Length: 614
Image (tube, one colour):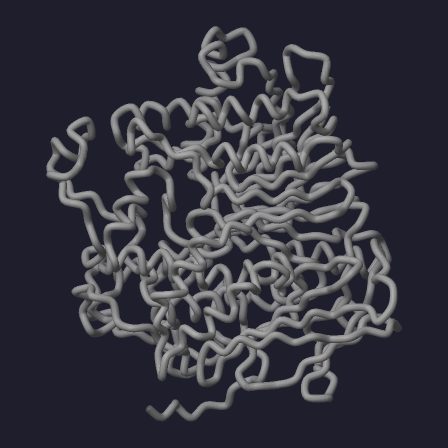
């Protein structure tokens, strides 16, 4: 089929600095034609190795691994770099804080940016744009800037897609000739007009008769959707949709090729038409700030880890959820499509293709004739167990995979799984010992708000863990006890700084063991979301409830799994000085000799707030 005639930019996105280490620097691009990319770094002699992955007639994902010809790249200093395409230097003024883009190879960490949960159509501001301005001002003033951007989950929302976004996806697929997969056997209407906001009605469900009699769903005769997001009306389904979606989340050039807001709302119900208009306003603001986000990621090493929304809400939350997905060919296909897309656009750059590239050969063989056939590749990617990774910096950065190595309950398949199984926790223990300081990235907070975890436990006891996302470390007895035992060991770090997201609000807790001779300190720094917020009024109520029920003197503390640890809550100077902050923000973590010096929030509005660390 002939492709539409359109003038395409050669580069849709990039360079995006991914993993930067003394031995190599990985740059990521999305391009529309076969090209030869090279890079130069400062005045150093370097070599470039290009890996190109074809995803469509006019679509290629490119990774450029740049290595020094001799020795190593200098660490902890600003390194300007240039990119050439087919021998001609790429115009990068729009991506530069100075004459050219620049990066820092992190070694001794003094400043790190961290955040999670970036939903394009949430009405809040994209705080990545504020982070870009922060780096620009520091570079302009010749001051030390953050050397690392850690994104700890929900970089995309595959289960919560705006109507205009899905419209843009449907327009971008034929423009780029994105290769399609074999059609799924779902009773979806043929036209987008008939699918918009109602896709969830056609996704697989588990009959209420097969549900446990100990759940409310059985007695209310409510079928259980395999995809449990309450916002699944535009849930991504096909592989080509996931590919287009990733491009639109990170490329301003891609939006110039489509007309997402041109849609006949006469096909929609009145509530859905109003929803479309609301999402349009938020997406216009998101699109306007995308150039700032691209500039940020061209100037700082950006590393990522999945959480559930990158694939679908409640991904692997309970053994029952996993069983439902595994028993449905269509559901399994959708989930695996999300995982493959994550691997391509996030996972490969996280380790600079050192281990994740082992999947490339099987992936390329999956393109048969004119479409994808992933029947063999599915087994390979689902068996891949190296999504987690570390950075050899000081403090050491340890990024956890809390989704694919779950500690499943063997007694009750409706019980929430532990976020990591015994083998993974033992591996974590080996990584943590004999380090003075560690920066630990856990997508879900290890030490959360007790009142909220109690509410989750109540819903779980009613057989409804999916309703309130029972995704906390303390929800599983075995995982909770083992993790606490690790923190209490005498040979684990004296300073452990945990960076988390997931919950759509931010806070700062410090933790110390009540007993034992190991005088260590654990910081729980939670920043969520980059472009998302928890309902402010509800959060205020939950904060007061937590204060009343779990004060220092409260006997309820004895019933929690972490009673052996003393948790202190640190207030913010944002608003009225609460310790739970609901506002779109990205966090700035400043360190001194491996210890926490400052924890601040860069709000999407431009405001900066600090947590009191005393």
